[in-house]
Amino acid sequence: MNWETDWLEARSRLSPDREAVVEARSGRRFTFRELNDRAWHLASALHHDGIDKGDRVALLAPNDISYLDLLFACGKIGAIFVPLNWRLSAAELNDILRDCEPSILFYHQSLKPLADQTFIKNKLDVCSAEYDDSVSGSLPQITPPNVAMQDPWAIIYTGGTTGKPKGVVLSHRSIDGNAINTIVSWNLTSDDVTLTYLPMFHTGGLNALTLPILKIGGKVIIGGQFDADEAIRLLNEEKCTISLMVPTMYHMLIHHPDFEKTEFPSVKTFLSGGASCPHAIYEAFERRGIAFKEGYGLTEAGPNNFFIDPVKAKEKHGSVGKPMMYNMVRVVDEDGHDAAVNETGELWIQGYHLFDHYWNNAEATKEALANNWLHTGDLAKYDEDGDYYILGRKKDMIITGGENVYPLEVENVISEHPAVSEVAVVGLPDDKWGERVAAFIVVKEGQSLTEEELREHCLKSLGKYKVPRTVFFVNEIPKTDVGKIDKRKIVEQYV
Image 1 (cartoon, rainbow, N blue to C red):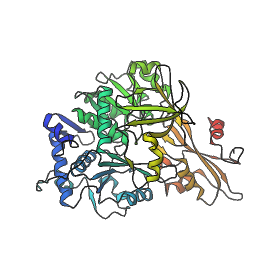
Image 2: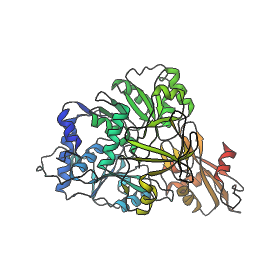
Image 3: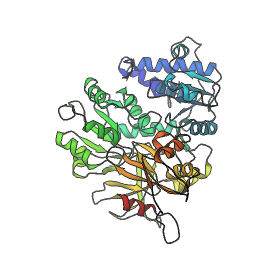
Image 4: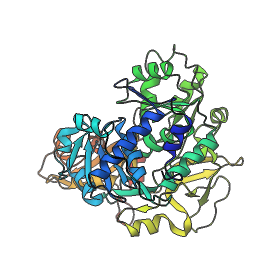
């Protein structure tokens, strides 16, 4: 056992019979001892199959116990866990797989058609009898290699502004730093229970609450596809104390007929992340007297960075509060100086929870981690009380339903259509999705193009959530004085 990195082993020793994980879809329940045993069995199976320290192990699955099986198994032998976004197209997925070159691809049977379209030959279905044997078999006990805190534990891919995803390498120190910082700053205890609906291939589903709560000895309820009716039932049946969802989920939750008449006696707070939260959601929780607040994070930093008391969140809609105990933040103006109170600047972050580097991308790493600070690219300000507000993004990233969409990537696909003369993609406000992807298109003279034809074209190359929900066919697209597309003016005209 590597005492510094293998905290699941220690937790299973301290709380062997405490329930650790409940899989809502199947009803299966696992104690810490069982979770650790599954990880050891799987680590042994991976080692037996030639997976060594530093090798990548990929997973393509909806939320499932296999995420924790593989994460902790990789941690024990120094392998690198790579959770994959199953909402991507096969072409996008293969680009990522070519970048990280996994030794094996685990997949869920529901995603077999997508897994079959990848070039990876070594695959295993996590719903198969063979996988069940891997997490419960009797292979010889292994002597794990020395795994240090600075060693990579996971690579989580996040979109890039050029359209090429970046592999965010999270070390054991990164993941552990976020967990400890969250436990201490948010006052988590072994009595805490969270319901995880955010996809576990995202840092929000894996690192925001799941791992901190497991580390402190609490319980994680793994939810599948979000369903408001099921969420209301599980929050009460499992006595959840804290839950993180994106505004899209909260939009569906507050409009469910049972929301107004359901009590949530065990819930200490509902937490929103992934995108700016509409005031209507704040107000719906305030009417019910239910604690609600926003957080801020990104894959490269934790993702947890701030704490705000729900009482203060009522007074300061949109504030994410103050920096947590073990990280520092700065708001920096265009000249590189610290911004004054209520002055907008770029948010910089420092702490043990920061990512280590981008996989195979030294240039992007150097740009993001300049001067030992993470340059987030997000705009922020702080008020007289030292409470911070996230104001938007320096770049044009769109967040729709908690998913990041980069306009240039979508624009590049749309521009490949032979009928398209010019295109601009922006995010427009949306009550349900936070933002919706909107495309403004100039069609070539003498050509024709319908919304349906455009969407069919996009679906060949893009995940469904990246395909424009709104399409405007226009005669011209606004330009700046120097001839660049003026996206700010586009948004101003249509909001």
